[in-house]
Length: 485
Image (cartoon, rainbow, N blue to C red; front, side, top):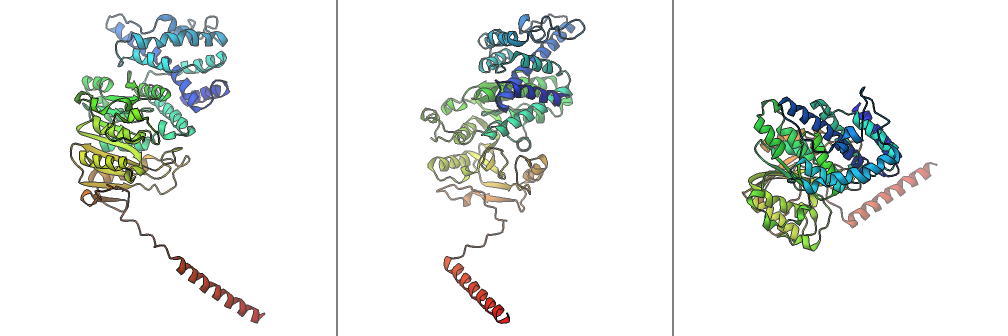
């Protein structure tokens, strides 16, 4: 039912003049789902308050609650068509009253960690693009049929939402910006292994895939977690920052659907923060991230960093090293050219990483892992606080060409996860001693010593000589045939 509902909503958005792409589809679905979820959450909290003999104070005024403007119902539970807005009246209410009302919560909320602030942030940044009020009415009715009540419902909804994010990433020119393959994220979370009591941070949060998977990992044994542990997971474990409007909204919505009511995601440009201003209280135990690659930052942003470079991913890596606690652990996706670029910034950054952190593992991913991105990537796993002495490399080979019809799966990652535990050597894995690394370039390129060496290229003279020999043999054979004829 859930899957069909999402498909029906997409079909309606496809017909609407205001929604042009998968990016619009998920943006519009998100704000409607959010308000539907908020209604369910408020009713749940009201029931809990009544059981305690208390009165619940609703976040939204009555006129702006789902049951009033979106789905007013008769006593028998069916939609009251005499009251329900539709057509131009519905669009006029949403654009002229609902969104302005909700956006003001950003100004009146106590602090950015509250759900009130998230409401204000979302509706300040997002606009209703659905032009037909009749289409919007249909979508609202489909959304109303979705249930958020049980853990199973939420799990299925979050899974379908992830699928929409994946489709959006595939449709966009920079797919990696929105969607990191979940099997890769799960493998990274498994290796870094965040624990209850630690904080997890992603400064390029995107759709919040890393934080959602880390939450799933840390709450897997939910039955044995204390009330304090569950509260800590909800309120003071997962942190993120995101620059782009749509990605921020999708990230917040994704975390909510995964069970985190008021995500600690800040809408800001992480790189605008000066490294020198980061203090001990700002640091985190675990960092999991896939920062955007290929972007270029302005000169004034570069001034916030010790190693000046326009490459966005290299600035993010400096930020992650700085904001990681001593003894903290990180898993960061970065394009593989970082390991070998010879420009001053790249060489300096590799040297800085090796000297300040133990870069214990480099995972080399096959081409096609990131759909639409068009670059090869590696994952850097490092612990802060001690220099690197040895690096364990693993070269992932899925045994097929990766692509849209052959995406990465959990089975592909299984051997890496198993071998990484003991840094076992094999055909796809090997060690590099940092003492043997060239200190002029600090080149860390992936060079598998177990791969068969390619035959050396022949000289032009050798090739010409062979051609002449073959020509002579061919001429001799032709003459023999002519004599027989």
